[in-house]
Image (tube, rainbow, N blue to C red):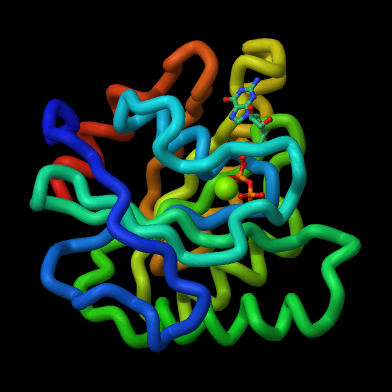
Length: 195
Ligand code: GTP
Ligand code: MG
């Protein structure tokens, strides 16, 4: 699947701007700056495809990427950034919740969690939103290159113990690094099974 070409379809700032739902989709969720756009670039092997940035909250829209006419990857705007004004949070909730609830082609959400920090309350809120929208989700640790192997084992165990309590959560956890390529092949294989 990932040998195919991946192209940018469109960005949607409102539900009225969503592309037609004609292909299976996988959405990438996570706190601002967790590495969603970087992971999409690493998966597709195209560095500048999804815009990665040091500024939290850079991606404010839903960005749709077509993977060879077989699967659509959706880069979602990040959450949990402390200085976000209330109006922005409301807009985010309307857009993301509306998308998750009204998208029958959405096969799975990938919830990215920074391996250095583990699950935060904003991630738990995201998982609850996914539970309520009846979207199956899978957690993925990002930036694994930034911590020691023993620390990675520890955060992995803690996170797995917590997701075991949630019914809609996929029971696996892949640790990734967009820098070193760790876990990328494994995640590609998982996504290919959804196309
Ligand atoms: P928003 O769009 O703001 O929600 O952020 P995002 O989740 O798309 O994060 P983005 O991919 O823009 O990455 C944020 C920062 O983290 C960038 O400076 C990236 O270079 C860096 N980064 C992302 N993934 C990794 C990784 O696996 N390892 C390391 N070391 N840095 C990473
Ligand atoms: Mg982004």
